[in-house]
Length: 178
Ligand code: URA
Image (cartoon, rainbow, N blue to C red; front, side, top):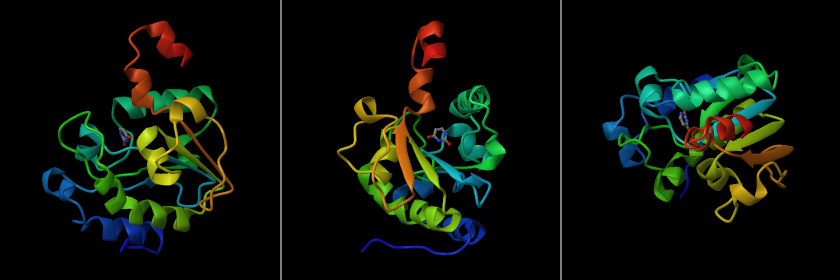
């Protein structure tokens, strides 16, 4: 049966440090829990920590995080006012491998706990993994990005591209526009 977690973000973070509910913990440096304002109105949910996040123990501090910061700055959004986290809290070790369904499911207890603790007004799923974890397996980011979906998780829930998807665009102009 799926586990559920309650408590403040700090309580959850402390518990998640010990999580061994899927095999990813074994090769990761540490659990990378969410960070930011624990009462933020807006929560951003990415996929899973990368190499730099694994080392620093913070979400979105590597190349994708730098692009995210740039996008937030252009949009006039201060990252300090957000809560930023990931659907999966351990690095997969081999770069660019997306999390498996069982890893997303094992980690669901944490994202669910974070949402209950933060109670955001808006949740933004960044990319297909976060959309799968929060909205459902049938959701297609390419077709439905930016559309609000009915959800018990928060009053406003939608998905958009993951910053890494933009990093994969080859042309500077194309990337800038995206
Ligand atoms: N870094 C993160 O913290 N999350 C991602 O989804 C990608 C990079």
